[in-house]
Image (tube, rainbow over all chains, first blue to last red; front, top):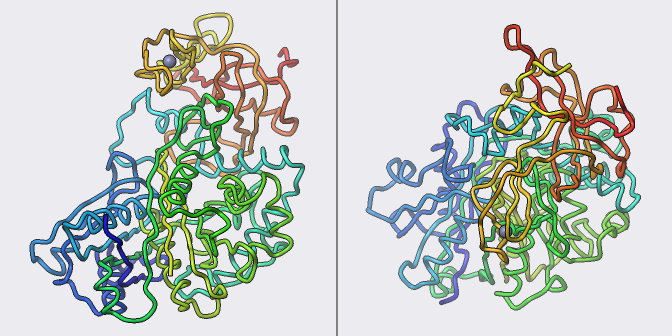
Length: 396
Length: 142
Ligand SMILES: [Zn+2]
């Protein structure tokens, strides 16, 4: 395998864009990525689209082919991948491997999403299958995604004797970071009191502690060392990318399952932990080497639980570390300097690519008012429904 | 009360006996229990894959819970709808099961308490009541 570099990144701001088609969002993100890389459509030998927000490719989503047919029909390879909310990172991993193999020199990974309003529901046309957890969670108890996260959040309070105030503080930190990011949908800071004054959705989680759904698009263009060198400026190398699925015995309340068989010694959210640890292993690094992390904060619980789960510090310490400022932009482990999902709202398949855009901006020193001081190694971690996990490590 | 009720998904809930039972399956080799019934054993250390029916019944321990305060998308037929608790309960068969907690107990939940698996009518299909599985505190006899 040969080394692979980020040549350019681009995004369309997150929000609700009823007048803008999914293809138009995608083309906007690609144009931005081309601008930052001095490349054009005709330079691309491959386009990998984060295609479906659902496992198995069901439902609606983006196809690389449609984007190419609106931009440049020069016969490039189009690959469409699933992986639900992790699909963007799966697309990135695929593009990474295509170039690392030596068969392609320049490949882009793309995600663009327009989300329906409200709770994420079943994919249209899904059959009524009594062996399908997704069917059962809706028909037998009507369990929304926030209900799953809320049960984790409730359990955390029990396990460590913490206060729900820590969730509010975590949400407020995300919104403070998002207020400095022009790509974020919510650019207004909120105080912990305002978080706790927002509607209780699923105890103990309030509205501002749960990510909304948004429209948005993000793209990353990858290439060879030679191309990166020719482009000039700081070279952003892909130290590693990894994809994993869940492990038997995982104690997590895995969406959309309605039962689990927890076993001793299996990591919580093993699809994400498995991907992150594999990424560290491949890069030859450990948690002490990470200068910032972008993680999938579907809720404020994730902000506290994931750094522990990944092994940055022992379980139960996040509340204190957050209070001491460790997760802030100038802290020991900046968490989501972008503002995270809580500031963006989730545009499912595009979200993991936005994380990678942020890693790139941070490492290049282009993050402006939310710049982490002089980072060298930055990582992402993302979870997708259906037990999809992925992680990317970039290095300057 | 639920004698004449039909399960909202008949394949996964058995209301024919004295106590409500979820229709799980157990691996004859490693003992792993699945709900709903699995196509094969997914324990990577097992590999046998022979599964037999395993009713999930009785008393469990509350692992965690939440109160869902907003009406979920259609498909959940509770009528009339009002906020309710959803719980994760560790059942004696070795499986952690999600389900609703009977409405009037919503405020009394404590992690670690015992709950028993029961059923409750959530809607009517014409004349026939429709029920789903539901947890009630173990000391509640009503
Ligand atoms: Zn087995």
